[in-house]
Structures are given as C-alpha cells and as structure tokens.
Image (cartoon, rainbow, N blue to C red):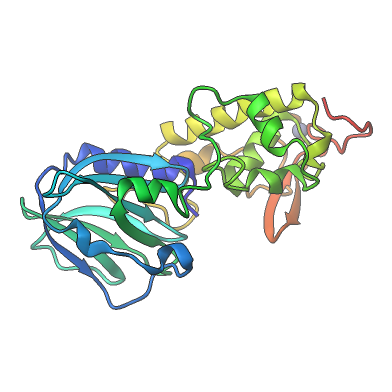
Length: 287
Ligand SMILES: [Zn+2]
C-alpha cells in the first residue's frame, strides 16, 4: 500500500509533467472506487474547464489545485489505495484495463488512474472544503514538515495503550506513516514494536521522531518502495525495497547484529524486529 514516500514520488512525477492546459473532459468508468462517507460524492465534473495548478501532498493523499473559470480554487484529492497508479499519457493512447479515471487536458494529454483492486478514491470540490473535511480534515501533523519531533509524537501518542507500531499507523496522530516505514523506524530507533506507546520516555520519542524522518526521506530518495503494485508516474518501480532492513525479512539475520529477525502480527498487519536490537523492555519506561 502506498505510504508517504510512494505518494510523494507520484506527486513529484505529476508536478514534473508540467500540466498547465485546461481540463477539457473528465472521464470516469462505471465502477465504484473506495466507498465510504467522504468518497461517496466524487463531484469530479466541477473540474471541467479548470486550469491545473500546484500539486501538493497531505499524508497519503495527493491534493491537486485547480483554478476554476470564476477564479475560485478547486481541488482534486487522489488516494491510491492498495494498487492505484497515476500516469500521464497522450489522449490517443488506448486506455489500459482497470482505468477508472481520466482527466483530459487541452494539450491532448491525459492524467489517468489505473486501479485493479479499486481501493483508491477520488474527490473534488472547493479546496477549502476539501482541506477541512474527511479525509484530509482529521489528519495529524506531517512528519517531514518543520516542527515535527519527539514532543509532537509524545503529545499525540503519549497516553496511548496501543502497541507503538499500531499507534504509529493512526493517520489522525501522524499523517502518512504506514506499516513498512513504521516497522523500519522502530528498528532504527531500537524500540520493541509491541510496547505500549504510553511507556515511551521523552528520549525514546525523540529518537523515534528522528528515525521516522530518516526512513521516510530515504524512501523518497529511493523513489518509493515497490513490493508488488507501486509504480511512479512513468510506470517505473521504486528502489526502496532493497533498502528495507527488517520489513519482510523475518528469520533473516539482523543487518546490525546478525541475530535472526522475528516476525509478528498485530492489528492484522505483519512486521519484523530484532530481539537483540529491539528487546522487550524490562523497565516501565522505555528510554
Ligand atoms: Zn539486531
């Protein structure tokens, strides 16, 4: 599932395509995408005749700004779900299977969303309304923005009794982090993934904040992680899977100490940790 670095890679690819010609047609397949309250009204028709502007990211969502003919600012939220791919093609190119959305621009280029599993989502409207409502309105702080650090993590998760790995996946606590990067950040910080979040001392939060930033930044530098489906705008796979130290490597030797990594499942999601580098804590507070 695309996490912050994968979505950021797609955002950068779309931005680099310099899409500036007005929207001449909005095409949508007959298939439903991500269902749920916030995605039920896709409202995509409002993008017609809009001029594409900046492409931003909020957590795991792409937020594309548009100027509508009345001078108002509209937005398009794209969620890639499990298997969503965003690409830029020429209009003449036939749509591949599982294409569910196409935004045709005045320069005969199209932005298309291909999503075989259809867990992705689309939502358009006034940018201001989109930012203030589900799913964007409830997102926690961005880990790669100024001001993020141990104090932010402690404030948002410091009273949680959930295992720290699970707590980190809560998008309302911190935006953009998913299982892969949470597992990697905990390994880099030497923190046992199943310890209750409330047992972390300020020093552990600080260390963890630092490793979260580092693993996300490395993921972006590597163009994202491709375990199965992820592709960037050019259709290329990421390279970060080669840099994962523990995720998906249960029973392999720890890259730091050589001890066999141990797999675990919590909240329905699997991970791995090193029992020597990330020991189960014996004291109440984890430093
Ligand atoms: Zn180790």
